[in-house]
Amino acid sequence: MRRRGGTRGFSALELVGVMCVISLVAFAIFGWGVQVNWRAHEACCRSNVKQIGLALAMYADDYGGRLPASKDALFRMEADYLKNWQLLRCSADEDPVMVRYEGTDYGVSYFLVPGVATDDPPGTVVAGDTEPRHHGTWNAVCVDGRLRSLPAKELEPYSQFVLKGKREHEIKAQGVHTD
Image 1 (cartoon, one colour):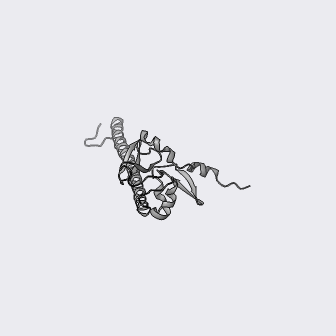
Image 2: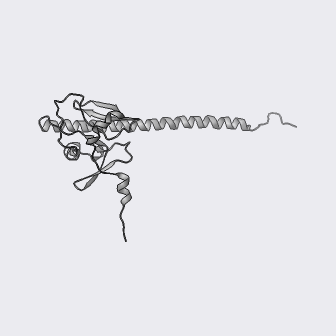
Image 3: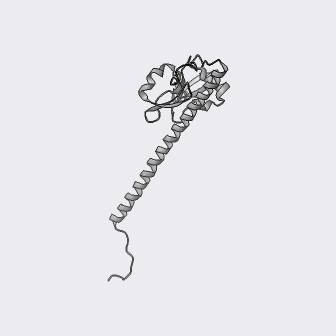
């Protein structure tokens, strides 16, 4: 005999339906969070490249419109114009090239084109990402201070300016051996 006004539980089909809805909502939120995270990395990288561009402009003011003549000038600029070595590393770069300069290892995610002058064409790239990290694009700053997001295929001519060193994981893997 059934009770009148009694409660009955959920059926298995109803529980599966609720679980599906919850998982879809969780998946949508997670996907949105990942996209927000990548956008934050890209914004941070663009800011770093912009700061490098501003440092280059200050350098050019001090040296008669000439930009640094060597690709490792990023380190000298860091000491005199950037004041923050963390600007040399993109937050999206999980394994940067480690370059030793005057006894210090730097994680470097950007390159510098040596020998450019401020009177070169305004669209001339003076610094940028060492590899396309932002959905197949890379960030660059031009002589006139503009930031550009360029496709991966346009990075190849600048590969000669990328500083050589060891990847961060190669340095960490060496460790200290005690016998």
